[in-house]
Amino acid sequence: MTEIAVGPTGKLMRRDVVKALLENRDGMLAIGGLGAPAWDITAAGDSPLNLPLWGGMGGAAVMGLGLALAQPERKVCVITGDGEMLMGVGSLATVAVQRPRNLSIVVLDNEHYGETGMQETHTKHGVDLVMMAKGAGIADSRLVRTAEELLKLRADIHAGNGPLFAQVKIDEGTQPLVLPPREASILQARMREAIMGPEAHLQ
Amino acid sequence: MFPANAQEDDMQREQLESAPTAAEAWPDQIYDLLKQHGVRQVGLVPDAGHARLIKRCLADNDMKVVSLTTEEEGVALAFGAWLGGEKSVLLMQSSGVGNIINMLSVAIAHRTPCPIIVTMRGDFGEFNPFQVPMGNATQACLEAMGTLVKRADRPEDVADTVNATLRLAFNTYRPTATLLGQRLLGAKTFGK
Ligand SMILES: Cc1ncc(C[n+]2csc(CCOP(=O)(O)OP(=O)(O)O)c2C)c(N)n1
Ligand SMILES: [Mg+2]
Image (spheres, rainbow over the protein chains, first blue to last red):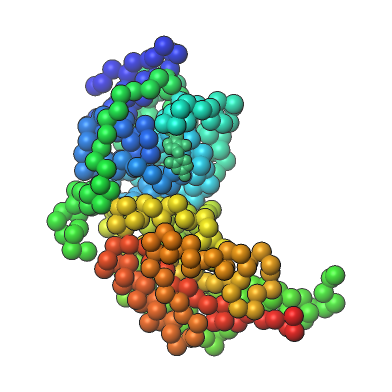
């Protein structure tokens, strides 16, 4: 199992967090929000089970919803940034109303818009995404600060008693770029093929 | 001014929202087309013009109806659904088109089938000034974002036009839209 290090701020290191969540994933599908979270899921090991986003800011959670509804037997994990989640925060309500048991939404909260030069997000100023997710109706919404809490989160994601929402406080340090393929039709096609086999291309 | 009586209240409400009469067949024809194409996920922000179609979808256990907080979630939903092998449709009013513009880049870049059925406002005998700017810009905005747009203004054209929109999306992997003209929805002007 990956060691989950803490950074100079005493907060969890994002690459370790994502690696731990995706290790031994047992076919779990992952959608990575644009920017650093997409690089994080790629650094954990690029795979057809990963859909790293290059855009669509604010859409990651509902993309996960559409996928989770279409594939109820598979676990779906959306891993995204605090800025991305805030842009589509209404989608927490949309997700909660559908109650997909197989969907988890994990926000990597560095309290900044990392990709665009580390401007502060609202979470830096006390906006509580866990309360917002709870208020939306996602009963299992939690704050994660420690390695122990992260391992519990991992176990619960894999148990599939969702929908589940987690706000993981992470170190704000920028990590080296690990870029996934940029041709998005390939990203879509490879995940479809991983799920449905070559038949996917004849749908 | 308050309406003087219930009848006047009804008349004013009809001015506010446009919907087809019960005699019109086309909402049921759209539902039949969604079934023929195997649509399993229906994302929507309601419009009075879609009310009967929405009811039909809600009554169908093979359809997952997803009520959205903003139309742009509908494009994201279509992408997620297609990743998992399900076809979807987005039902919305023209005023919501401005909300989906950037999210269309997701469907374009990934080559995702994303059919959209838009009921028009601000189009033909509009009563509400706020509907006009977006209604007037609806087709231009969608087309500027690479969406193939077809229009139906007569009841007899609706089924063929929606069918073309669904086929173009599912066969050629892109966002497509049918605009259902306000004329179809029975815009009332009451001498205004
Ligand atoms: C609609 C839209 N607005 C703004 C941007 C610019 N943008 C790209 S990444 C990003 C910040 C993302 O921040 P966050 O989700 O917190 O991820 P982080 O890099 O901090 O992990 C922004 C604002 C964009 N790509 N799309
Ligand atoms: Mg951030």
